Length: 354
Image (cartoon, rainbow, N blue to C red; front, top):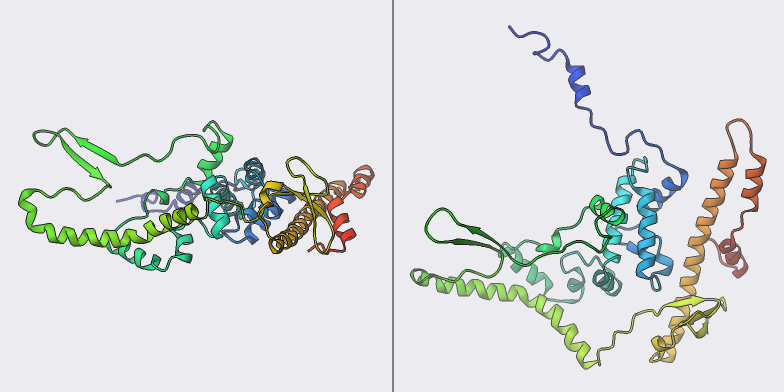
């Protein structure tokens, strides 16, 4: 006869043995970490610049700026360091944003089309009238997503960036077609191919040739949108002289810094900004006026972002000066004396903080 333990009487002990320790269980978080999680979760999933805090300087930020922003935001939101309940979600959004902006080709596609470049030909779908047809043909043929569906997890990206994985752009890559060689199971060597084209028909299978030809036609029709996606921009670039002028030139404000030497002025706030002369040499008068308006918008966005950080930092200083039983007068004086230049400049320009 089974005893009480075997019949399940020790349910509480079994339940305790099944407890799973989450990554951020029992951990605390700072005011700055909470603010980072809440800010990131308010962003759209594909607002990659905004997620990394680079929206105000998206047209001028460099690869080094993107790496620096990723390092800062990932350390703030990593579940091992941040105990907030939504830190894991925010950390995945940060890693996803860096996966796009940290890759030169993906960043160029994102800047050009404004859509996720890892989505299956999302940018081509917005412009190509045959894209829906191609998707149906690919689905009918049973085709998978291809190697672009294999993404690095946020934890792997974090480990490679901060660990010994050779940096965020080091390591290996995707190889070519893979083959498995089987030396057993019969005479000779049997080769099993994964991927690639259709296998060559044997003589005794010649009666199946019409079916293979029909399948080949379907494959060609399915590849037609992809061919148009790659070759039409190439032909357009050849006939246009290969021009690759960016949509918005890089710029700095207030004072020139080589190579930003050509000065212009924003239309409403009358703020000086400087660009690289060669980047706007071919601009028409109307395009220069549009550039002035864009520069003013970028300035306001940047100042508002920096002002928000200044307000948050001053609040943290005041909270640190306020203890459980008494207030530290020295720390409170330092908090009150903390300067907020971006907020002051917004006020001087007559622009609201939000």
